[in-house]
Image (cartoon, rainbow, N blue to C red):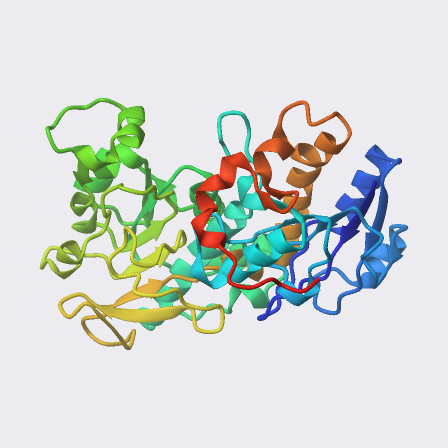
Length: 405
């Protein structure tokens, strides 16, 4: 079987890859029967020469490969018919801007595997860049705080080499005794926690966070039942929340009364209650001045996330009373950071970590008959149609016209 590491074609360009040269070498050593080639790229964080130095052939023509592996959406004109593709297609939630991409994938008889659909038997995601989103999102939360209050100036994460460099910059700061509330205990939330711990921010219990004052910066990491409560007051555990989200309302206001920074690293499911409402934000008791919405669900659980921001312009101001965007230095403004492609700012770390996960969880399935069903569950299209698992996308991909091969 021949694998091709494709060049990223989406604009704006993405420096990440699925495999670093070192991890690609580990792949080749573990599966010597695999043939692997790398498409040249002048934007990839790892240079072409680094792959050559690890023994890989550079190849512009990917048409002889069986499996093509990339990170972001492949432009329609670059899709090669009748291949297996792995990339983030951003189609499984029926995203309108990628409807034509999925139509083209079906029309070109491509077997499509989305990184987001690579899950275990319990439907838990096995690979992703969430940890690195958490790393950069936490860093950007501090950066936003410094800008809002003219306390300090931090460089953009993308200008720094790796996570260690982010931490080194943060350690030089003298922070006031702020309180930080962090939601989520998945990959994103734990990525943000890594930064807080590395910078030696003191972690405290929910009770102490809500009731005690400190002379040093502190943070609390909370889970769904810390910021949601059943409408009937019963306490039935996390499973009940996931099974019956509409029976819950947000209980987050107790945190907005004491927290200075909110780092949002939670997973937000359909029908779950809004976490941070406009009413909470415009309350005279609200203390939150910076919202680092790492999860970045526009028109989702965070009322001040009016739009996604960009790496070039990561912050904007939100006026709670008027529910509109304003300059971040406006006296009434809450600063919002809602960059939706945060891992792009740590391309080296993100590539190294992603490749390790891909090698551990996905590549074995090509050589063990997919005994754990990894490929079977992740496959969105096959033989010119949607697979049963993704048949709910049927209406989304009704083709208006045939896409030429």
